[in-house]
Length: 229
Image (cartoon, rainbow, N blue to C red; front, top):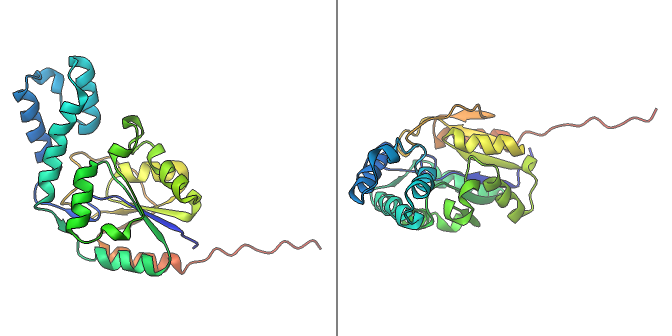
């Protein structure tokens, strides 16, 4: 199969941390209450990032003030983060195959860059597109997030693979027609809610992902020659 570009999610795919996003959500709620946001306005904060824009609109508060509360929690969480076993082997393999690499994440840019540098994998990625790098309504699962990446590399979706741990990774991949792989066994780092979306392939961990990528890249679609007779 002719794959030119691999697009990775970050949290729950490449890195994990003991602090879950459900715990981050509770801490964010506490921060919002501390600055005077009523509990009934806060709601269940699902999803967290988009909820902050709703809260800002309903209360007249500066959305950047609210976003910073979440960003500070995300950046602090990176300090305890770890790289999932087998991640560097996967990245090395793809690089060795001449496949270009990108990050597509709902995390903030500060936390994303800190995590990538901390774990020594920043230089593998030619493009890092966080939620801060696109209009907030275009963040995945909106397909514009992945479309911006495809446009940057000038790669058609049929030559791209998206690798993530959540339905929010698979939805945009399927909308544009890219290959999708869901990692199912990385519980640490997963979002605080689930969205069911069937991927083209599922693997439990990075170790199995490496084996799958070997098989995918060695698979060729044979198109019968047209016979005018």
